Image 1 (cartoon, rainbow, N blue to C red):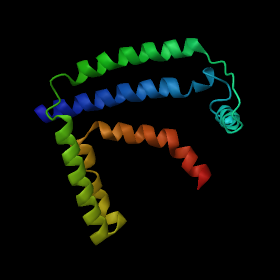
Image 2 (image 1 turned 90 degrees about the vertical axis):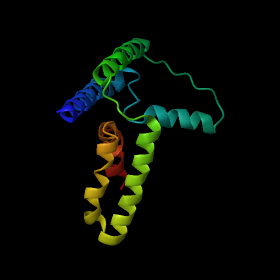
Image 3 (image 1 turned 135 degrees about the vertical axis):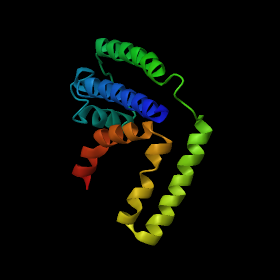
Image 4 (image 1 turned 90 degrees about the horizontal axis):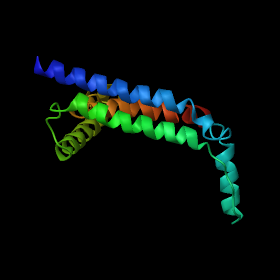
Length: 148
């Protein structure tokens, strides 16, 4: 029953992180209208290449709202996970490397599809790594699709 309570807390913490992400990433155009399209980054890169100064006006109001939301998120996560974290960072890191070595061995012996079950152990030893994978895919997934 204790493990169910721990996993419930990790799921709730993951939901808080995803909610924060979804509420803010879709509004990045409020920082600067050319940010989501990449035009802002290209203009900045061009000015750096030319070694010229670039002047960019950003929306400080969105930044203040983002920072306030983040400051509220941190204590909410600590409250949700307080007393539930049984391992320290080093233990999680060591188990993560063990899982990666096991995954490498499985992919070498059984191929990609035979190794999927082994790679899922990452989420057992580092449960919040799942939400990180989701955020990374949501952030970079479209780039990969358009690039490749």
